[in-house]
Image (tube, rainbow, N blue to C red; front, side, top):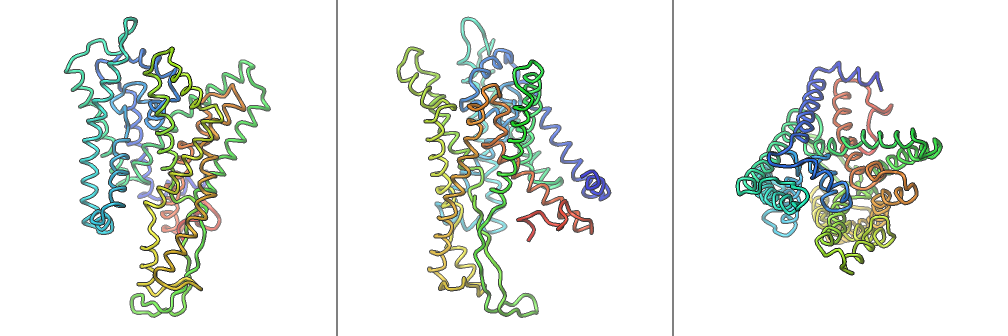
Length: 441
């Protein structure tokens, strides 16, 4: 690995891109520690220490702790992600937008719409954050010492500006750095929580609260989960394709064979994000009910992240959203039409409608084990907390769920880009084969 790093530094273009990316990510982390004006940060931190299983706790995970600090990057890049998802869903409903997504000029226009949507969502969320902070004021402590119209406007402007800056920084990484900028900003926010999680485990071991053998089992288990997520991310089902005759440039190719790689997990991390939003919603709403309410106790018991009811419902919701999101983003008819236009066919299947039905049948079958595996990874955080009560939720979140899948996916994408630069300059890649498995084929 040291040799590979030295090789990377020998390529001026690649070295410049990596250093540029690291510099921008450093700016992102600095912004996550600069608090907004008019906030009692200490009082806010005390509140979040007791509400890590709410929707706000999930928000804080994606922002790398910026939300609990009421920083200028409080809501991170989430409005941009939300705007992108909304545009993507609209493309599945409206054919005009779907056609624009396949055209270069249309994609530029959609990117502009996404930016406008980000500004609107960030401004609305900024107003909501201001209202939430003010609602935390009590007779004993003032999270917002001075509640004025100016505070609302300042919070709204600060949060919207911070999101726009993050969006711009992410685009700069994509254009001038290495990797996908938006994904890297989310990933660095998640990774920022890892040192504190390691320190908590070290304190537990030092104080004698946990045996060394148990600690080793925990870390070996984490490595095993990372390997499992890599397998899930890279796994795909090959659908063989034959081409009767193809004309490429000035050359003619007859009886060519290829395959369509259908990923085991086409929906990526989106089912977990949707499921978490739904599963955290009842607990978040319950916090506003009276303390002596029977309904409040029932909701907290049923949706406690350590309960079997929570994990069972969580898995079912993930399976549902896996099929739902796959159906929205993957269109078998488009694949069948593309094959027909390129004189390709699946052996034993008639071109056209029959091909689309066959591909849809394959996707439906492989999505079930992928969805179940995704659900197991998602609840693994809760399982670790149950098996090892002394493990903090901060560390357990790295055993599965959204954070682990995002980190693995982004790491593989970034390594794939670095691999391409190494091969282009006639250096060996990270693997002896010269290619990351499942990529660059």
